[in-house]
Amino acid sequence: MNNAFTSAARRGAAGAILLLALALLPAWPCRAADKAAAPPPVAWRSFREATAEARHRDCPLLVFFSAAWKASSVRLDRETWSDPRVRRYLDENIVAAAVDMQDMPAVAKHFGIAEPPAILLLAPDGTQLAMLRGFHGPAAVVRVCTYAASGAWEYTDYETWLSHNLVR
Image (cartoon, rainbow, N blue to C red; front, side, top):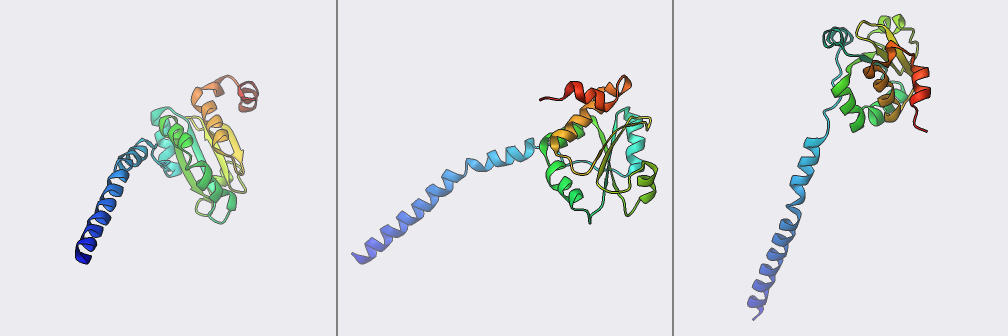
């Protein structure tokens, strides 16, 4: 009788484990689908490559000036560039370049950037459209990119556009 009880207990435990596994199974495809639907990571290019691509595609260029030692640069990586809205907007509308200020100080100096981080938006012809200095969250980055991608820079400056298009 003891063996019969032990055998039934084993079957019961095995059945419970199987039921638990089957209950969790439907969640796996959902998680995979969520990952598939996520926008791709920001496709950072070199400054030279991105400048040529922006001209070729006739779309704005975002240049992210950073330094690994600067906490606000790391925070932009963690909070802004990882945001799905930012990633999607950049992927669809903007060419993105990353410039490490330690590796390319001449590029930063050319644009008057002395301290990272800074986000610079350029027209396809290289005209400066807008600049954000320091940390900015996803909403601010999407807003400045919207200004650049909309072509509004052809008739108004960023500050004026922002004052008319800021959601209060």
